[in-house]
Length: 183
Image 1 (cartoon, one colour):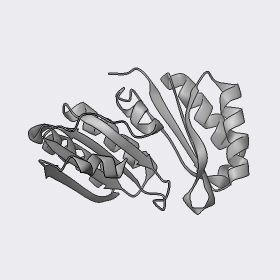
Image 2 (image 1 turned 90 degrees about the horizontal axis):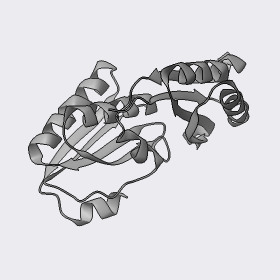
Image 3 (image 1 turned 180 degrees about the horizontal axis):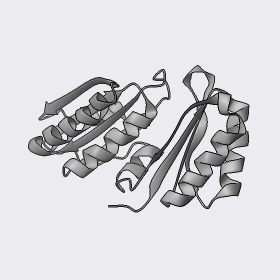
Image 4 (image 1 turned 60 degrees about the vertical axis):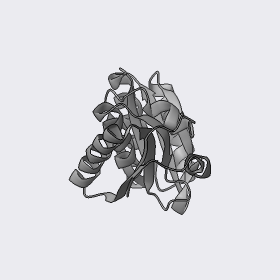
């Protein structure tokens, strides 16, 4: 398991997003995982590092214009498989089943991806966060049927606890072109 943590800051203003990102990077030794405008004219910043650095960076960014903050969160000790999936789609070998868990928020999507990886031996395909999704997110993954079932249940539990589950599916024996179509 990774010792890296993720900090997320979602803002109502793109300009404030630039300002917040600058403050975050000047405050603590964190790496930028994602920083971009997202649906509905908002700005999303995701940074990674040790818990203390991430906490300090997110606090500095959120403190600039508190009324612009839609959401800020720290997720400690995130599974290492989550980071490549956040950066874009990965292309693992399609195994016995395909799973997808969809949620109403980016933060929940990251928590779902973390739970999925910690619950079972699955390979993440993608963690799509807010782009062309109206602020929603989804996580896709592959593994043997039992692992994907366990991972989907873990993801559903996380999203369900927060009241932000949209849907979840397991497709046993998926057609090989399925993954090519979703990447």
